[in-house]
Amino acid sequence: MTTDKEPGFTLLPKDLEFKVKLLLILTIATAIAFVLYVMYARGVFEAKQRLTLVVENAEGVSVGMDLTFSGFAIGRVRRIALADDGKARIDIDVPRTDAGWLRSTSIFTLERTLVGASKIRVFTANLQDPPLEDGAVRPVLRGDATEELPGMIAALKNTLENIERMTATEGSLQASLGNVRTITERMGGRQGVLGGVLGSEDNAKKVVAAIDRANSLLTSLGGVSARLDSALGKTDSVLGKTEQRVFGAGGVMDETQKAVAQANSILGEVRESLRKVDAVLADAQVVGTNAKAATTDLRALRAEVDASLRKVANLIDEINRKWPFERETGIKLP
Amino acid sequence: MQSNVAGEFLDWVASWRRELRFAGYALAATLSPSTYVAATRTVAFKQIYFTAWQILLPFTLFAALFSMVFIEISLIAARRFDLSQFALELIVRALVLELLPLLTALFVALRSGAAIAAEVALMRQSGELEAAGENLLRHELVPRVAAAAISVVSLTVLNCALALVLAYFSMYGFSPWAFEDYTRVVGSVFSVPVMAGFILRCMLFGAAVAVIPIVAGLEATGRVKSVPVAVLNGMVRLFFVLGLIEVVSLAAKYI
Image (cartoon, rainbow over the protein chains, first blue to last red):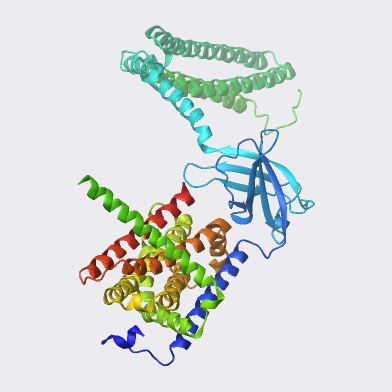
């Protein structure tokens, strides 16, 4: 052999044949194992059921593609064919072990994404539904991200145009900003925030006039209370006369007592109404906190009312002193 | 000049015809039972020993290193582009189906092809070949062709299997739970046509590595200077054929 003739060449080992056989056996075993593994991987040893999906456009679908359920591959596309009605038929093999996920109410979708391969998915809402029969034919819902792109771009363009129109010199946004400027200018004007809120100087003036009128109303209320005061004065004189009549003539005690009781109740009512006036005045004070002049008026008015009340209280005290009803409930007639 | 070019072209065609004729002869002889005698078997075993066994360990280590680098690059690139779900398919398609068989064929061509071509050319130059005649062709060269082809296929199968195992561990670590996922990808890549194409290509690589250097060696003449020319021509032709097989197979698969 050539190897024996040439110097420096490796000498043949004694177990050459064993080594070569070992290599060949290893190779053949690896090859067979790999072929079996690929057959297992392709589901040759699994019992399968057929599912046919009908779709308008099978673009992006390829043989060997997965059918996924909850992100797990449960089937594989075996064949794609164009049917007589012009629709694509996708034959899918689903191993019997995974067929339980397919129910008669399952929904199949074909989704095309911008990046990556298309996906065929199955959604099963109720796993208690009857299982999908072998050889079932089902329609597919298509969801195509790229198909929606033109519509999306059109909508986006529209939106951008709107924004452009809004922000243009004549646009509504500019007009709104102009309005805001007018309002703030008015607020900075003579009538202040009131002018800004009410829209014009005139309206603000009206409000100021209304406040003035409220002030004058309060003043006239003061007048009313003064008149009340004089009325009380008159009552005072009447009572004086009554007293005179009681002391002078005598025998009219009953009537006097009634009159006094009436006067008492009237005075109570007067006090009540004065209390109401007081409340009204308190309200008016709240309303007119801005107007200092009004509060001064109110203070004077209240002082007057207080004075009146004090007088009335004095009067009642006086009546009580002169006719001590409280101490003697029974009245002796002469 | 014109006639020179034409003459070269004719020589080129003639040498290719010789290649094909010898390949056909080798195939016929391999298939005929009369070739399988103890002597041819010994020759074949020796050839396998020198071509495959001797380089098995260093070449496997080299192929494993190459595979690891390729797998890591693919994984890092895929993760960076958020396409890691396609990394395994890329690795199987590019590394296992294309690169490793080609790498193995080139390695065996360098390791044994050049040696066989030189040996045959020297036998031709010394006239040993003519003296032995038809018998030598049948009982010496044909078994060596078969053995070289078997060596290429054997090394390819072992290294591809190793690369698949390495790909699994590189991708998923030592977890056994990714096996189903991995199996699914392997199953989807190795369809029947792909598998058939892979086997066919391995055999073609083996045949090219075995036949072309021997025929190139046979082209040597009695002159000493014709030996290196014959070897050189044989190696160039072999690399060209390997590249052509690869390109044609890729075109058939993906175009």
